[in-house]
Image 1 (cartoon, rainbow, N blue to C red):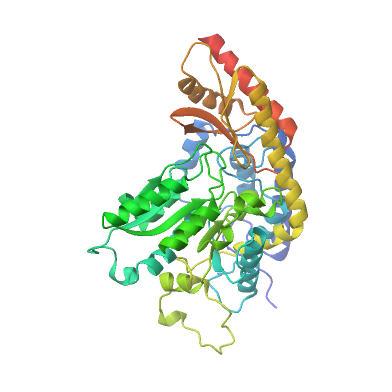
Image 2 (cartoon, rainbow, N blue to C red):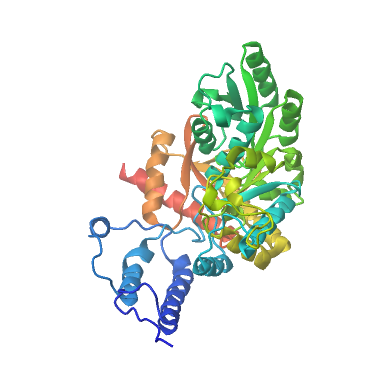
Length: 486
């Protein structure tokens, strides 16, 4: 038997078993050190200009380098400047902390290097299981079909692609150009920006989006929705879809899903729910009433890499009738054809349900994390996130230098420092930059009713209510320092 090839200088891509073991052991130590030190590190640390210049201007490698050298550079130049997601006070945007179980499973998925287009491979069956679990978790129909995507943006695009083919038959073959109708999609101004991109990508055009007003709690105004649909029909347009949100990115509001679904059924429109962030809240008994009607959606998006604590990337789209996905995406290619009775043929070919042919084994980490945490522990973790958000709001509301935006349904809190002698929006834009430079926490910002606020979205199993006090104290300290500099 030939001796295993060695790759001390990177000249051969393969590793001997011993060399691979040493490399993985070193990577494991680096990962352990990273997670151990994460709470003490800045929530975000920008890489210095000289480092980014060196990385961006690095020449194409001509001679291979050793694994030790590469890992040393990762440890020195990459890990110290990671984005910081998972830090106990990383609350920016909608980015969940990653379960270590998912990190481990992801390494094994990468090791197997499966292409999960479909077939009889075990990954296909695991993805079907994960999709069924997600549907059950949020109370959606178990007959739904779907697939895992990179995240909510891609998943919403797939859902609306299915909508277009169902509501506008022939649009896939004929395209949208030259159609006599004016298809319209209804969404509130609080909807995620990816809905706009999806409508554009599908050839409907930005002007096909009809922005429905929101009520005082920033939920879609159903009365306004009904009036807009009626007016648009009289004007000769063709309403085709309503997009509701279960957990808006700005404030965490859950639209009145049951009422919106009723309008959609009565008007013959596709009912889509973007629950990328908040749909899992349906699994909390104390929040379940807010999600009444979700089960009636024609399509639903849930992102495991948000509030299920799965590492990036993992989004999911579920469609009530899986044939709608097939109608929107299936193509024929001779080199991909597999007979029904062939040994390699499996229960589904996911590349016929979405835009990707080459697909990574995302299901393994979702499956592993959901098994490792379990529903009851998930509920306790979600309650802790909600309690941390509630404590943040309580502290903000009780401080005379902090203005709190009215709370909504989930774990988003919007607040801002109230300066004594300057415009609050302009001041808080500068304060947000100061918070990022300080490093004790990371929040993002948003504009509500034309006013700028700091925004914390807490979907982080490392966060506790004690972190809320650190956050408010930090914002006040930095705000007062800025006022003192004026």
